[in-house]
Length: 209
Length: 104
Image 1 (cartoon, rainbow over the protein chains, first blue to last red):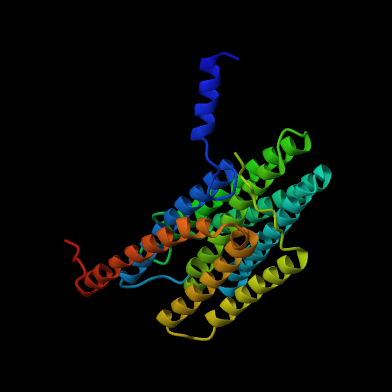
Image 2 (spheres, chains in turn red, brown):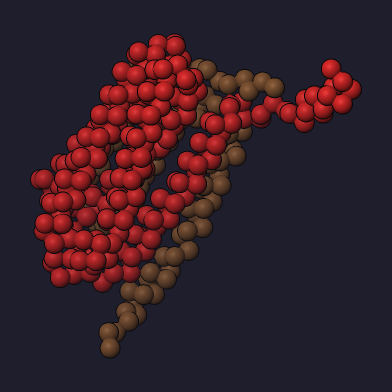
């Protein structure tokens, strides 16, 4: 090895320090993305709060059955999917590829079920006349704008998470990814669940009649 | 270079306990909704319960409790500061409702 190559290796080694966070770059970047996305959802929920606080009247369209019950079922489904995702991460750490894929596909199924229940509720609301800019009761249209934009943003996260989980599951089963990838994807999925812990009470329970 | 990742796993029993706690909190939220509380009181209660749920989720499901402390201090205080600063909007909401704009 020539002198220039030795000095380049030595220089390279000198500039590479162990990460202070004790984790891989992909996991740290996922945490950074989660924090940024949490700030986005926080801003959306604050904007909803401002809109509601400054509205003279505000509709409360959600009956216990079917709306609140449906939202409760969705919450249980999403919480269960977080539990199954944890099982997938545990299996991945044991290098049990078949077990990891099994738990990830169960998580994917629960995520798809959540999305299906949500879309069914949306279409029922569309049939009643609700939309981003319409209120069938004749009151403020800002309810629809807030509800569909916040739940729509969350639904987009769920659907893209389901797609990502499927891709990661297939690639991990083929041996092309590591347990670290499963854990990093799991962080995203738990974040999606945590956002719902705020959306459910603020959008559904506060607007229940 | 060593990343020295933490590999501590809480175990299924703890996961199930946290899962049960989260379900219980959801049930409490639904029960509170139908107690005819004032909107402000209900909002405060629901937010407090949601923050507890988020804390449990971040600490145990997302393993923050088992990561290096520097991860918590690098990420969470900034996010809390963001949310605290967003609270400046409430005075304007009061102004808008006290002086509604008349349509032409």
